[in-house]
Length: 253
Image 1 (cartoon, rainbow, N blue to C red):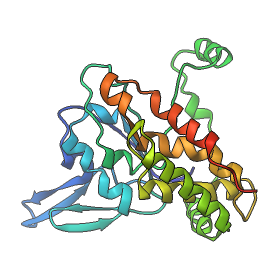
Image 2: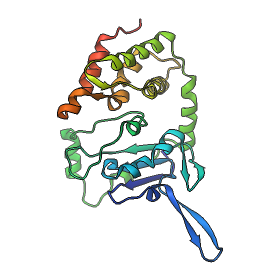
Image 3: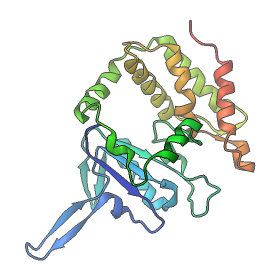
Image 4: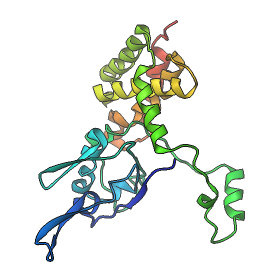
């Protein structure tokens, strides 16, 4: 995507001002000048987000939900499109901080990145040293085109039966005895919007059940907390429970 990109390498000693920006006193003019932080970009990569403190993590919340930041009593809008992509280390690693549920709920979806396939790893091993694969990439669209697509998403039709289907799924998660925390209303809205976006990207102006089914786990798995995770740290339990819910709830015909 042809737009502004920044990468924030999050560390334990980072402060919120390192992300949002800070006002600096200019001796020449006698005024404070606001210096923007790296959050002011169209696509922001927050690398190893759970290596920084909860205080700095929380600095991202307003940007993620409202597309704006408040610094020293003044609210500043972020330019569209705004997308924040975060990576996190496994909690078994040293020096990681817990990501609170209210922050996880701000992320539209989560993708688990495992080991690369053999063919992909072969390309990694045979790539010439010092060569950056990103140098060969060309943009496929401009940021303004992304905004145009985003504005078309709410216009994608969703049948009333699919709305009820989403409600059945999220309500089932809230009453499941294996879950300590079910899918939030924000999660239900995210599943609706993601399903509409999926339909748009597949060239349709309407949502089908497969859009919802394929996105239920990526959109909702990081928003729920299983009782087995609280007791023994089983991080894969939530996906199994949600898959079971997906298998049990009747699909609209």
